[in-house]
Length: 246
Image: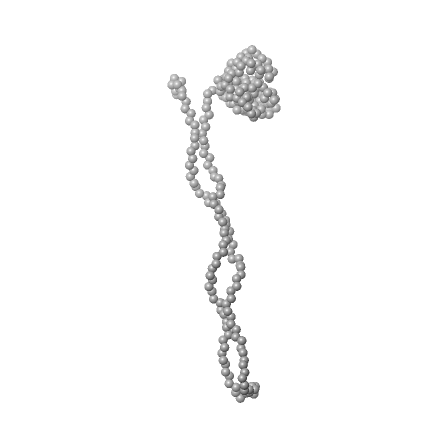
């Protein structure tokens, strides 16, 4: 399998699948042979630990960002492993164990120590990161509006019409025309006339007069947001004689 330097660098982080297409993990490191051809990869899995299983790359298939090896998952996960993030080349003993585990034919040239993964397929590089400010809103209670009912006493002044009886003495002379209707009588006598008068009275009744409720409505306003973000700056320290001039 001949890969360009760019293709080799792109292997890092790609999914590693077994022969059925099931995901085993992702590429952690790439080792190349003495000729610079990538031959082995370490596989990062979700199993806790600092070791990564090794898998042969020269028998694998690259399919749209995936590395598919012709073995089942258990075979790869039980393969000889290296420490995560190692920068050490593969030794003869490691290579012998790997060829034996994967039942690959061993050539004398294949048992030469494999170069370091960093030197063979991963040139010096840095990842520059920076913070991005994401502005949004968060709803939170800021105050409480209440309806509270209380009782107050008011003085009410008003008037009401009242009636009362007043007495008027009416004297009507008896004439010859109506004298026959009256019997003369001499003696003491007394008559009464009941007089009536109205006086103001007050009664209270409870009646609903008003419905009071609280409603809220949203008001949109612009408020400034002030924050500090960090970003990384990468400076290259290149000797003068090694600088490229255009």
